[in-house]
Image (cartoon, rainbow over all chains, first blue to last red; front, side, top):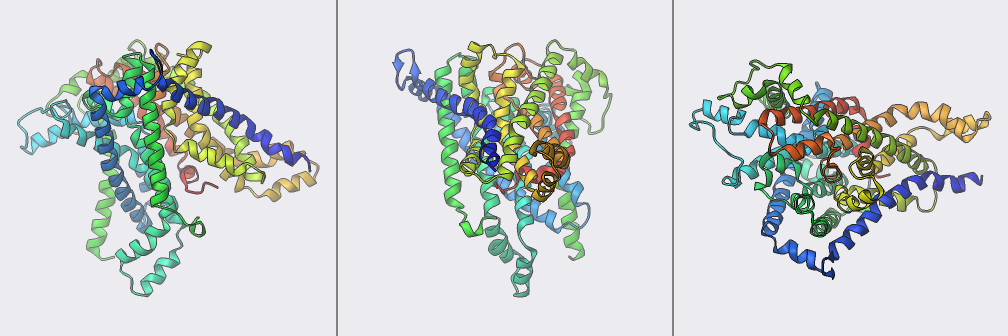
Length: 282
Length: 268
């Protein structure tokens, strides 16, 4: 059939054209824009970006967040995934409840935790009832950077652990039960079985989850804004501010390029660290 | 399992359920509590004078209703575009082996590991020039770039799951390729396609950055909330957050069966 020669290309073409126009073109535009300044082509925007007071802070804050949130999420999601495997009753309901945050936007998650952590919020009320604080207490302003950081971490772990969980549960289901059973017969303890069997076989899923989550974590923005405004600068927040408040598209583009490079580096990092041998690939 | 371990296991499970559900319950209290509720001290965990009025008051603020409508339009269009463009691509990936198939897969995976929303920054300039700036359509186009890779991968795995033989049998009985697709494959794939569509809707409904950058007056709900965040009173913020959460939670419930097809490792 000659039809099947061109048909797949015809079917792919619309998607390809679309991604070309709305992915590749803006990608190139961003890079070009970041080098374009008032004084012609050059590194001016990057100079402005690095010279800004918030630059160092936003780099530090974003990396601190990623390095804190990602390990917590993976550990929590792994624990939840293993619990689901053991569950004999109500598994579907529990899985549904645990994946609810999948539908919650980062902005909404920030607002949820604002309701809990604001001065007269529920957490303060609980602390007050326990006699730990004398009255309404502020945790989320520029004088309390540590608690503001903790609040962002809580909101991020609350919201985005679900996506890691879904990917890992998908991976856990692919691991044949016989492996663990065989190991058990040979006397392997649960921890040994986890480290020697589950973890290595889960590597492809772990890799997907980590790439996806790390890239998204470097884009953290709305959660932070909802909780603390600009008291806690992060990279995407700065890009947003340069574009919206300062109307300086060049510096915003420089931030965008920086975020893209970091995301790319993170992806390459996980691809290398958790290299999946072809024969193991699911 | 011994009784103690069983107890630990069950209470751990319940604690994690509470970890997810209690914050949602509390923002709901905030949304229905109004101004008095937001500043009440100390708070109570049971609703006192919760009423729909507080939420209605929020919806009646100038701009909120318009923003919600814009969100629905943008999300609806995103849903439409990503299925219209993604499903044929998914079908091609599932049914044909051809040169370039792997390159396309790679491209799709690449976009997934990429901070796509950031690309809205240069698009502002282009969109102003061609009149797409500050329209739900412009927002939907960028959101489609986010949702399309998912739509293509999900539909590819759906079509792979439908035996090729069914289609071939239809051809034998004289159906054209299109007829066979419409009468045999489509009905079987429809629930999964619906799930992918709903997922695209949620992606757009929840997206903050691109929507905020690409709109000024015709804001989506997320963009509206983000820009008025600093000056709006607490109870309005809670109402906004709550309104954002409700539809997505319902949608996730509707697509729960397909979550694993959407997020599985299988890039094939």
